[in-house]
Image (cartoon, rainbow, N blue to C red; front, side, top):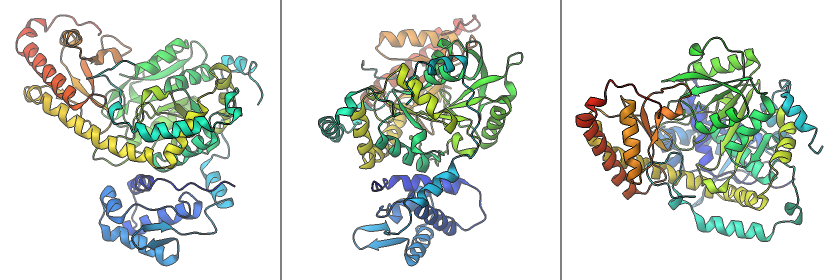
Length: 514
């Protein structure tokens, strides 16, 4: 058996943060002790894994350091942890935490009875052909990460090494579902940081989330079948489902996410339900627990698959991590879609699906037939990038960077906000929404911004039902500080000039979709 790679220390804090979100009458120290001990016994924390410092963990979790030390000291006394003077606290070298213990722990996470893999007719036909076994966006383009902050030197070193050492088999057609080391690294990351229930075999590496949506639509939906879509919602997913011939039924989003009570009547039961529960795109709201549970019940009742798009959950500012919807259920009716375009860079063209057991084999074969697998050297480099801690450090740096860039944008827009421009809360993610009162103002601002070389995305275009609510989706992550200040100052002045002067005659005229 290959040695267990020590997990990046940051993930311990992420997982403990989710653990503490569950209501409990037990003292905090006892809960921390029980969680760490269980993870060590199950092999989720491998022997030799170094824990974050007690000061850092206490700060990240928002608990007293003495509370944390009480739990750690108990684990040291029992032999689960050991302290090394001048080095830190480490998981002890124990006989369990590998082999059968890991298998037993994972078997508890996987449902014993997965739902029937009722593929679409198109998916069944497709399996018959399968083998058995850019441009500088600037402000305010949504979804673009800070390309200027990516750690290119260590990444390039890893790429060169894995390209030079790539085995000959990687030059051939592949049908594995991705490099095993990357699937294992992603599985470890998702289990700890997002509370996703999975084994490495359930992770399918694809060429971005868009390819994942296309594969889901082809394999699980026939033309004319219904998919419930968030309204407003992500245009990329809308395009994939529309191209697949599915009937998209918009379900309104409010302050708690998709509202099942407002599903339009007169349509067939859904085959798919697309949601962004952790950070709704583009509104930015988080779906509450009661809504999540109701959604899972609705999917079970309709025999539908939930497509959970978790596109930028790594970036949170001042709030505790939100566990994935997928991890709440044993029924396995959720397909979890992740992307590395936002956390690393879009040109990487890598994403992944976490599939229910019944769908793993059909999806792997279909993906290999339709899209082919590739970039195995890149995948191997990414696996080492994650295992070596570069990934978690980059995420931590980007949280600080994006928090600062959002603050710069708010500062630039402050004159307009003081006169009534409403902005979304921005507790997570890579963009803000500026809510407008008039579709004509939205159109004028978008047109004038383009003349200045500024990208403004009209909120109304995210609606399937015209005319849509007016507003602007303002991406700030991929713009440098000086670009944010310049574009933000221009937008504030442009909005003020419209609402205080030119826009008055426009009010009352019928708006049109952006």
